[in-house]
Image (tube, rainbow, N blue to C red; front, side):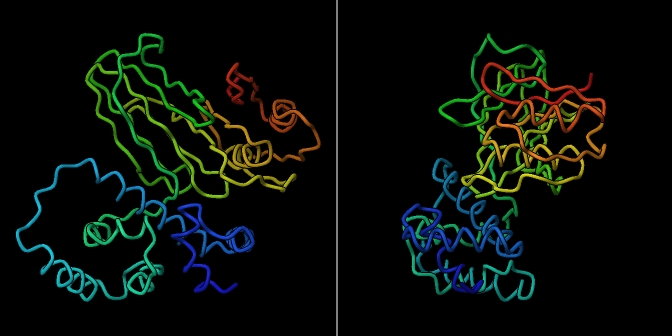
Length: 284
């Protein structure tokens, strides 16, 4: 399967309607081609952003139907050579349900597109069970949810744990936060979560849609967290002052906690497994 052919399946794969045989070939191609993976991550992020726009109040111009094509053409001409690689085939895409929604907001999406596949969204809730000023993660129907209850005016920032690029910013004024951290990619994604002005940053590895078969490797603790989450299909939280220490791993254990402990003990970290099943790697 060529990259151009794989890009034709982005929409149907995202919607979950891709034929099973093609799906397996597509996922294999994603796992082995970093460029295609980045393209699909950009596509997923754009689709999620466009979906969120359904809830925004937008004043529709009187002659929108006459103007939108001209605006998109002008944007494409102005930014020629700077568009992401998947944008070149967007014009000829056979539109499915998700892709159809993109047309009305195509100009906005080109201007504001991010490159990460995973997304964070939020709702403000009244939740007295969350510890004040402490980042907490829980599993709800198999999905990771970030919880935070500030003692005053605080801002929580969620960034990519790989690129460091900011994904979401949540200004809080005493209200509690619940934000699902969603990963629609086949492989594990890393989120960095920080309360502005406070240290350290908390990192969480959220498993993707496919299980990783890679058992052995080496790198810093973030890479270990991604490997653990992908192989054992469990979220991994890093509560560390310094996550740059080198570690190595070989997942021969059946238990995720034992595997994590075997990899980090020599680096001076400790491992816990919360009642919700999440693995936590922390300073001793």
